[in-house]
Image 1: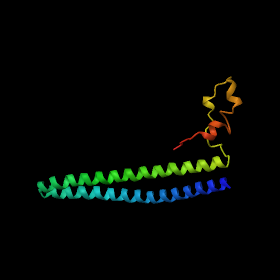
Image 2 (image 1 turned 30 degrees about the horizontal axis):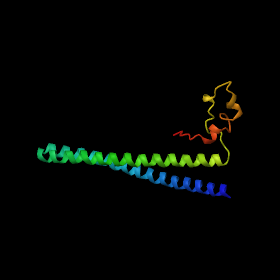
Image 3 (image 1 turned 30 degrees about the vertical axis):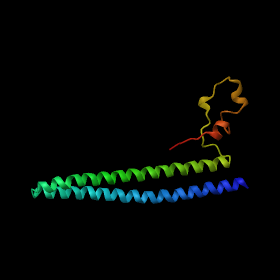
Amino acid sequence: MQHITHVKIFQSNIDKYCRSIQYLEKVLQRLSLFRAIFFVSSLVVVTILANARLLMSVWIAFPFCIIGFAFLLLRYNKVNSLKETCTSLKKINKDELLKLENNLESFPTGDSYRIEGHAYVTDLDVFGSHSLFQGDFEYSGI
C-alpha cells in the first residue's frame, strides 16, 4: 500500500513540474520577445533624440534604456533558473519512480570505482547492476 502512495506522489510531482516547465517556457518566450522589442525601440529612441540634437534627452533616456534592458535580462535569467530547477526536480521524481519499479538500468553502476581483488566489493554487492551504489546514488544527468 505504501508503494502505491509513493508512486502517486512521485507521479503527481512529475505532472506538476511538467505543467510548470510548460508555463515557464511560455514566459521565457514572451520575455525574449519583449527584450528584443525593448532593445530595438531603445535604439530607435536614442537615435531619434541624437539626430534631433537633444543631447540632454539622450543623457536621460540612455541610462533608462540600459537599466530597463538589464532588468529584463535579470528577469529572464531568474525565470530560466526556475525552469532548470523544475526540470531537475522532474528528473528526480522520474528517477525515484524508476527506483520504486526496480528499473535501475539508466543509473550508473559505479564500476569505475570498483577495486578488483578487494574481498568485500563482490560480497556486499557495492558496485554493479542492482547494487547499493546504483540504488542509493543520486545522479544528476542534467
